[in-house]
Length: 266
Image 1 (tube, rainbow, N blue to C red):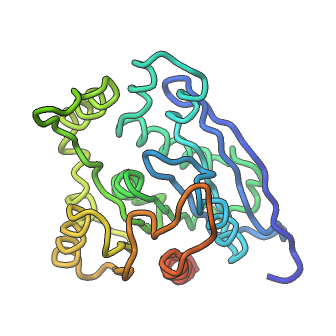
Image 2 (cartoon, rainbow, N blue to C red):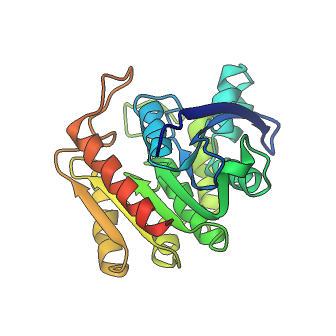
């Protein structure tokens, strides 16, 4: 990569519901276009959660125009919007809208340092629920997205209160109702097996069983895609927030992802 230093620039976009998406671009600014990767955090996280600053810097240092951002639900909470507005911003539908907005801004040259992004080579990286939204987005934008990597991603768990447990919160109700209304569009299994682009699933073997069952299904129904099962890894590859440094499991996940994107976005 020569002697070029890492350049970081922030940006703000406005969601379809009027909430802010705050993000940043990281790239080795050498005057040349780089393949782009849009990085999407999990449902309970944010772009600066635990390993994301290190992961996005590493991706940029490896030669990618790296875009990370907060879903609009993050600013809805930060701005102390009323409960219903925060719930609406937290739906899977809004998450897809937010990711679409980032992709549109990247393609339209509306993000920082637009000359440094090769808009013909775009990859998506999503963790947890954003792994699911990245799968759906990749399927819906196959002409714009060239490769997909998913970290422990898929549909979110759906809590059904048992006797003695608390009732669903308004946010949980709104999120679940949105999912039920859009079950066909949100079918992550069908979206993944129907992909026409190369994809990588990185899955921790100590994660929750529904994601492990999903991995077995993907391997059977889409054997042409790539899969990495990380031994001893939980849902966050054993990383914690506040961040205490990269675990061995995170290093395995990240290196597999870098190798995949270098091959597919070359």
